[in-house]
Image 1 (tube, rainbow, N blue to C red):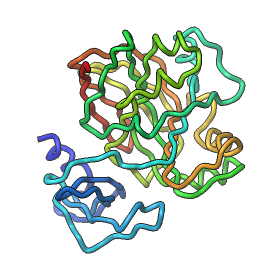
Image 2: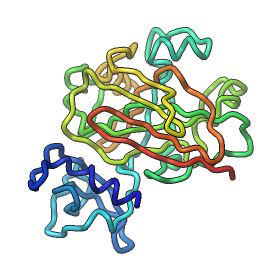
Image 3: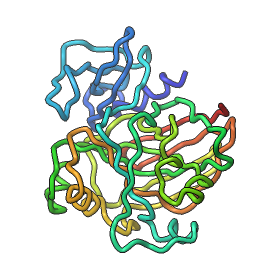
Image 4: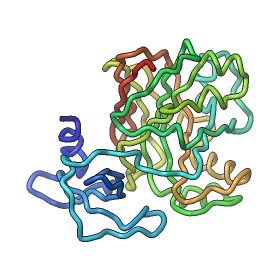
Length: 275
């Protein structure tokens, strides 16, 4: 039933039309094989020969979306994140707003597909959600200016920077608190038609809104973040960037249903379970 609901939204086509208004890139499991795909109408996707940011092209294979399983839409070499990029969020945790972007990494092993289960580790007594706009790179970036960095974006997605808050406070640095398996849900797809301004981000738990923010509220814009990151490390095609979370972060409990919604992109849904 979940996949049927997703299928009805993917193409965003007018009734009676097969024209895709918003190009959406997915990664699916079909007949036991993981493949990249692009939406071609409300119910079908066309498989790609590989990742589109690596030259993958559409094939003649069309797949009913309802019979496929959604996977994480990217397989990045690294996940680069930024902390305290919204003033209100920095203050709600008792932190100062940084003068430069505060960077940290999450490992690709933390990635979690849409509808997958966020697993609460026994090492933490307080795991929290962080709804974020995810950015997928389309070209390599090294020491790029903001305009060049913005042009290197392939698309946007929804991301949940799940965090063991108690371990973050204990450790001071972020690695352990951000890196548990399943702590980086991403999806449900990558939207390639977007504007970097006037984006909204909403986080919900069990249907109740907990977070709401806009890209204009970021301390550092998406283009500025990418430019700064590229001065520290080379960003590769397919790399995933987490751009920070607005205020309203809060605890997750077993049985919770978490949603992250980015305007013009879609809704990422995941369940929460105890290990």
